[in-house]
Length: 469
Image (cartoon, rainbow, N blue to C red):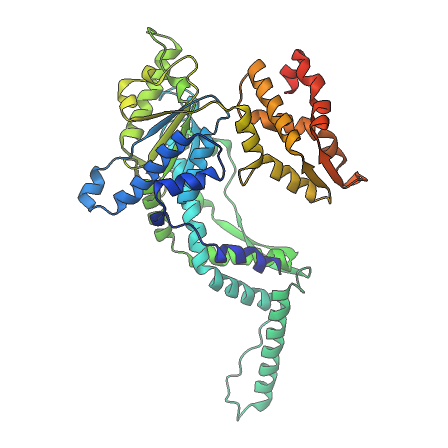
């Protein structure tokens, strides 16, 4: 049955133990997904290892050890976001990517900076909830099975009299139990998946007014639905669905019922406070230009001053409780084409002691990006076409040609780094992707001649190249 298979991999998953990984091994793990950028990987690996070291200190000393926040400097598409995202996934940390330019000063239209902490807490809650689900999942599945069997086969009352006084009733009860167990086996093997069943579901009666979703309520750090939910309540409604869909619904209901909500909030806040990572992108967009005394630059400086206490360490009120930001790791990033980190206000500069300049990607890097990482583009497209019975085979020279065209377009147009490979690959494989399963020849070899044929006219025509590649 699909519902049982769905939960099986999660139960068998063995996460990496960070205590066993030194910085060199962390870099090796990042190498599986990001090509090059050794300096950046080294910096984040040290930051991650320092977290493990801090947890082994005495409570008094651990409180004094602040995270060494990092600024990654480099153009778009060189791997800044990917390094931070993979680092968070490796450490199983709550991770939030947010653009610094989306925030405005208090009093202006836009989101306040504390919203990033509230968003991070929600991510932490989701992570911890899923882990708690793993702990209760076996019991939840059994409970859901019993509820589903009650719907498919109404319960037979257990005889109140001893078997010696009511043998007929006990015989009927035992036959019912045997039938129920046979039904359970069919439920587990999926034989009953398509059978219709009527299930009682909770339906919220909370009104959907636009005012309740406005930013103003969010700034209060409260959840309006939680506050007013009791006034409107919820009603139960019977819905008809298939057995497999019903099982999924019942398992979720049982999981929610079995987990400890107080523990959920407590563990989520602890995880956010001690291992949360916020990737603050486009920080160069809020840097103040030299000599400016009024206008937009003043507003940008105001945003920096609003961000400062969050990075320095403050307490933010969320619907799950108070959250301290002292030990959240902040990784900022920006191209810094028209400004530099020194254009940030001194106080904010001081909270980002580590600066790492990212390397621009070369043609050789593009070849590696296409083939080496576990999520390499060549592997992705090969797998996609494999779902329709089409086998793609890229010759080495063809991969070199794709890398060459990507580097060439980046030089002549805007340099968008590895993201250029996406547009190049789509242009090269356009006909194959469109034809898909209709292709007569299911074995396709991509040669350098084929790549040049698909791209030559576009690359040579500067106007076409500007808009298509």
